Amino acid sequence: MTKTRTNKLRWWAAGLILGLAAMWGMYVKAGPADEVVLTIGESYQQVREQSRSTLPALTSDNTINLYVRRPAVLRFSDPQYGFVTPTAKLLSLYADQDGKVTQLTLSPQLETLPLEDAMSIVVKLQDQLRRAHWRPILTADHPPIADTPTMRANIRTGADPQTFWLAGNKYQVSLDIRRLKHESRPNDERYLIALQLSGPPLMTDQPAS
Image (cartoon, rainbow, N blue to C red):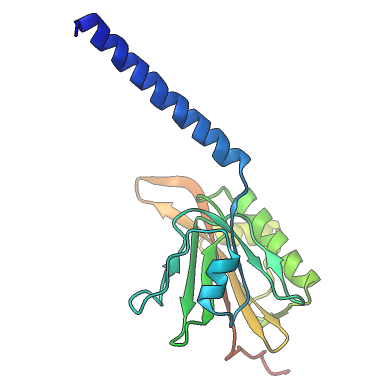
């Protein structure tokens, strides 16, 4: 095989790989997003069957941290208290000894975000909770996160506000937003949201004064 023909084959192979990569990228963008569908208390196996996701099989070694390997939307499917999150790169479920889902933790974003974008996600999630009849609790010390100049200033200084919500006597959610600081980039403002969802035992509201 001549050197010229070898070079042509290399260029052809490289072009084919790039073309396939571009086609795959278009397919991923055009295709439906992964989705984890669940309610607290369902069997983990049922969650896997009704979801379109990369959740792993349940074994005796991994009941604590069952995480997706590809970003996915969470659809909390309780008929009364349901809500949907933006696509989460970090989404992890926890199952008990009976294989039932007891808790989940997620960060409803694909990367750390500017404060403007992070606040928008948090406010919209809280609006969903309100519409689905969740109620905020412990509001004296942990009020719902509001997009105000004061709240933004507090978050920028590391206040890390956290808010708590109850759905009847069935579920609870904690939601917070915090700034991530990089030692090498102290002026780079990036923010991370964390949402935790679980069932009983539930937190209780503060007693009336």
